[in-house]
Length: 165
Image 1 (tube, rainbow, N blue to C red):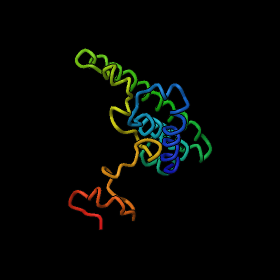
Image 2 (image 1 turned 90 degrees about the vertical axis):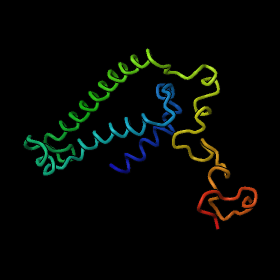
Image 3 (image 1 turned 90 degrees about the horizontal axis):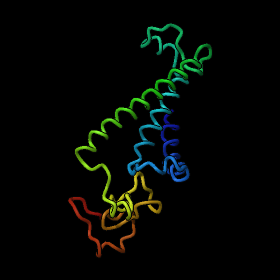
Image 4 (image 1 turned 60 degrees about the vertical axis):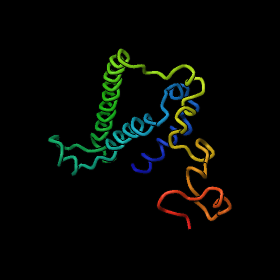
């Protein structure tokens, strides 16, 4: 579950987000959809798959409850997890829409047009989970020196209490 919860959101953020029009239309500079929605849904479904019968008996008053890996009626647990996740997604859409409609009456929810034209990433100066060369560029003046290369040491001396030696 841990490997999938780390790799699947990365894949959806770095690969699928750039190719699927629905995801690329969402203004999500911090990757919230991937780190919360994708991981939450995946965790719920995988819990329905791997739910251990003895642990289920500790927390659920339902007898013979188990995950899909344990056979029997375990497939129903996966279905219950999916239905539960879809309910939460629907609830979030409704409640967030209501909150945004109320907030729209008080403050502006969108950036001004001139900022939108230069791009959201340019305005914020970063991209969610950017890897150097694929987003934010490595800047020695901001990131300090992180290698044995001391050719810039005189030009950009270290700042702060810790010094590069």
